[in-house]
Image (cartoon, rainbow, N blue to C red; front, side, top):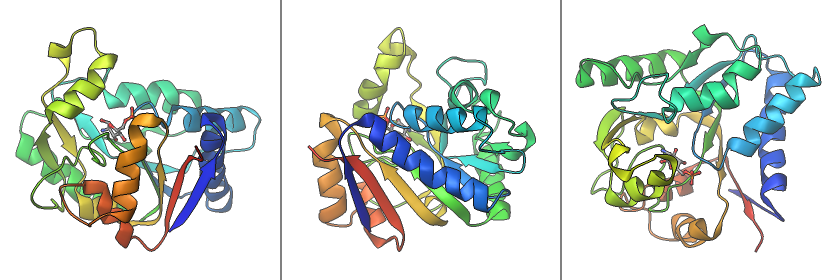
Length: 236
Ligand code: GLP
């Protein structure tokens, strides 16, 4: 594991974006695993800036996202498709046929998990997987549990996650109760994993995840087993 401790959010975003930018330059048809949440917003901004300067070409880049709320359409402002479109897809020359997220409106939950898992298998090992971390240690939407779930599944969100994400919705009742998420084995299928964590609320859970027991009760603790994990966080 490589631990990179930086001074502020801007430096964290820049550092993470530079790793991705180098990958895209060296490997134009690279496969990226992307994350949502407030933490990677700065990273996407840096990538868009680089694209606007003519430094990056996304035309052959393929992306897969970690998760999506069940019940939200692509057009819903809090859906992860909307987020990705807003922060990255609509701002660069990525081919929308090369981007993948679970379909929040899929009629059949089981079928949707099978479809997404199959797609992930076809894409194979990603070059880079970006991850944030939930306040309860979740990665993607793999919530604390008694087991690590390997494949894509639909999960009931915990009260802690609903509360943490309620800030983005007008009323807490609007936060979806379920979400689709890549499973742990699928998340780990990447040459490099970049975990970014910023803010007071993430300090303790990051420490516990990186140094504590490897347990599904702290899903991010599984990352201790990654060969190539880069943790980018703040120094104080
Ligand atoms: C969300 C997402 C995660 C994200 C995490 C932290 O619920 N499902 O992929 O990493 O929670 O989000 P934030 O960066 O907003 O703290």
